[in-house]
Image 1 (spheres, rainbow, N blue to C red):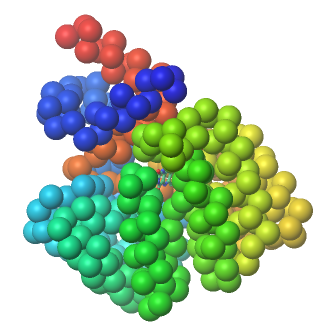
Image 2 (cartoon, rainbow, N blue to C red; image 1 turned 135 degrees about the vertical axis):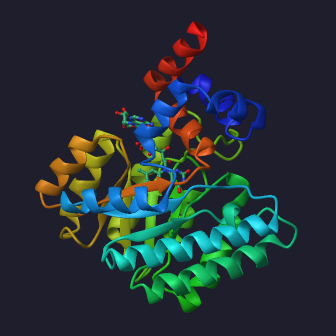
Length: 309
Ligand code: FAD
């Protein structure tokens, strides 16, 4: 499967593939596994149900790589409505939001300034709603820009978190700089294709890097957010938390909506804080392709239905 990962991930940015595949019933079935629905109400209902099971959530309004400044403004408005909805449904302060800077125009001319200003607006709305924002980490070419935006945002909104990708060679060093008091760092393996010049390509090396980063985060003064479904890495995370005398609540485990749901509830029953990343919206293509690249069985289902057409 690692061999298929890079070509599959290229599909995430392929408009023709998106148009061809999005109308297929098998695709719709797959999407519903990972995304509760296109509307804000779908996300809020799903958040309420997860909360009833003792889970907490980070909501993500789906969309990325905007090419039109007007689209970035629409994304800001969507987050305003999302945060208002969370307050109305009394889901804050537990629920937080996740944000992709490419959806706020990071890739546009003058995108660093534009996306920072938009992110600032959303951080302010989140603060007013009693919650916080975590910046997703995207393609490796944007890591420096995203960390620069984080630094700027944290001057006014120190509660802002960021995701880091263990697959990148640089991440252990980044994590050392990010682990200070008050920091909120989400450690994940990394869902984007990256060349061997900047990333580990063997899954075992990615896991080893994940463990090295975990050690730094668990020993540090910040709030580690461990985003993985990998049972071995979860085991290492819990063992390190115990070794560093971290009580549940001084770190959290994070998983994606629709993945290892029984395990999510088992961990809650064991006293762990578990946050579910909950994406919603109509622009699910890139998100779905990244999930397929991680999951050969789902991909097989899609290919079989293509052949049967
Ligand atoms: P894997 O080895 O991929 O999976 C371990 C096990 O989990 C699998 O054996 C399987 O049982 C199950 N599983 C994993 N993926 C799937 C799937 N798609 N469908 C069904 N079962 C599956 N990546 C980024 O690049 N940037 C981010 O900002 C980011 N944020 C994330 C936030 C959260 C809360 C999580 C959980 C992940 C995030 N990711 C992000 C994705 C992450 O980088 C990985 O691509 C993804 O989590 C799969 O890696 P894994 O650690 O779960 O291990």
